Image (tube, rainbow, N blue to C red; front, side, top):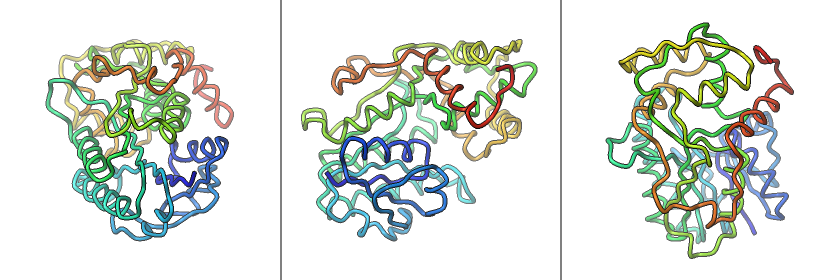
Length: 309
């Protein structure tokens, strides 16, 4: 079928382009920069340059498309402080154009949300995008994931850099909260299968956590073990996210506009909802956490040596 992958220059988008082509689909990419798509290693059958914020290029990109993947996030850049409004308006524009073009299904990758706690800016924005897409295109499938384990995953790379560069790991109060990190290969499998999934699983959201539930402290310790480095931890009884995120971003060489909202989201458990057996519904066999980390580090080391490895 004819598919569209927005965000084709990103980690997930670039990998999805190749996977959909391998499955026999025609793939059209949508991005702001041809150079960034090429740098990500993506080679869609066609590429439309445009911008979801302004709507430029969307009509051309969506022409004759059956399934469109919405993989665009806007937490970085000069207007990062207002990213929630930008993301909502972008999603509404995309959803309106997709519905007008007759797109049968939009597939969206968002984030797990806490069951009974206030939403962070990051997760609240993800939920608003999900609602806009589901409302406009009834056949939409929204996938909610926690931290994705992969060599090019920004969240995973951030954790690895902190472990590499901090002689002592200061762990804020959110260290004891739990989540279910997922292998990037499994995320890709869910996305690919969503294109041809039956209508019975569409029109709703699915939580796609990995098979291993753990605290953030345990997750960091297990990544450190895989890297073969020993880092003593310093438990803190406070979060101090506004300050801690700026310091952590500087240490890891990341954008504070990205890290701040991500760290806000750690202040509650982020677990799949009960009764959400997405793996069975989509026929996905999940990789264990340790295997996912080992694979991600091995892929990373093909281009760069990591501390302790």
